[in-house]
Amino acid sequence: MVSFEYEIKDVHGIHARPATDLFKLTKNYESAVKVAKGDREVPFKGLMGIMSLGAKQGDTVKFTFEGPDEEAEMAAVKEFMEANL
Image (cartoon, rainbow, N blue to C red; front, top):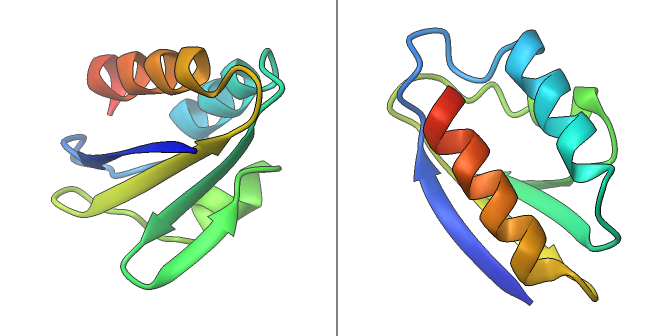
């Protein structure tokens, strides 16, 4: 299991367009992904999970990956977050 934290920089927070692109990215990997904000954690199996966190600019989210390609998936998600959110 690996994880990283990221502070949202986008003024709109995590909104539909980048959340959709992020979900499409994770579908290329086998590892399970969870995302958390504060004490609330959701499995990243669909768009509504991450959107339900209501992550806004300045909020910190934590991504956790578990599975056979967890390192590669974490690197891809981290790169996506830094480039888009």
